[in-house]
Image (cartoon, rainbow, N blue to C red; front, side, top):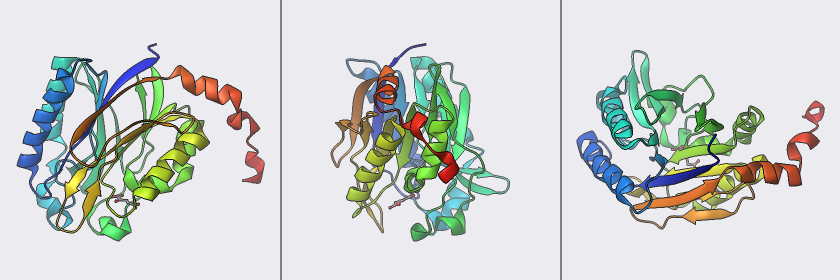
Amino acid sequence: MKNTLRLALIQMHVDAGNPDANFERLAAKLNEAVQGPVKPDLIMLPEMWNTGYALEQINELADEEGERTKKLLSAFSFKHQVQIVAGSIAEKRKDGVYNTIFAFDEQGEIHADYSKIHLFRLMDEEKHLQSGEKLGELHISGIEAGMMICYDIRFPELARKLALNGAKMLFVPAQWPNPRLHHWRTLLMARAIENQMFVIACNRCGTSSSSTFFGHSMILDPWGEIIAEAGEGEEILRAEIDLSLVDTVRAKIPVFEDRRPNFY
Ligand SMILES: O=C(O)CCC(=O)C(=O)O
């Protein structure tokens, strides 16, 4: 089991309602991500990078069973022997459209998926999207991890459940808009500190017709320290994390042993 992980988070602009432009942009960014001086073990993408929040047309725009996404990312991960936590996409299934993350291993196989379970009513998600029905759990190089999407981070119970199930790192793709940078940073930090785990959060940047997005993708360690943070524009945020730090922090302040679940 490998304890270190080199990460590359693709913070990018997303063209709402234009999947062709977004696929093209992503393909260029993926190549940039693997061309740096240090090849990443894992690449992560932001939320709904294929369609953006073109919710009125989401039924027509969403990726049918995720096929277009799977074709691109499966071939890329195999060719470059890199894992991909594929942000999320608008995925069309028989019963509607879901906001779904697919996780690819180095062989190009999908080994986990998660569809957002808390739909964000401020942006009318519940009118256009279906809610997922299972937890986002996966293994990254043999280490347990969790996935949540954007608004999900306002629900500490979900992150705690993933941590209790063994997660040592949490992936959070997002399209988190202005003016709530303070909430974004504070909630990510809280989820890292209270669960003593790495939080790896990839936001989009740029503007859509109704919102502006501040970027600030970030990687936090289990102390809640920000070890890498992007600016407001397009950027590939890179960092190497040492997962043994999770056990060190949990041994020093034994939060999980000190829980009193009979009171809550
Ligand atoms: O909770 C928030 O403030 C932002 C959430 C959001 O934009 C989303 O879930 O897409």
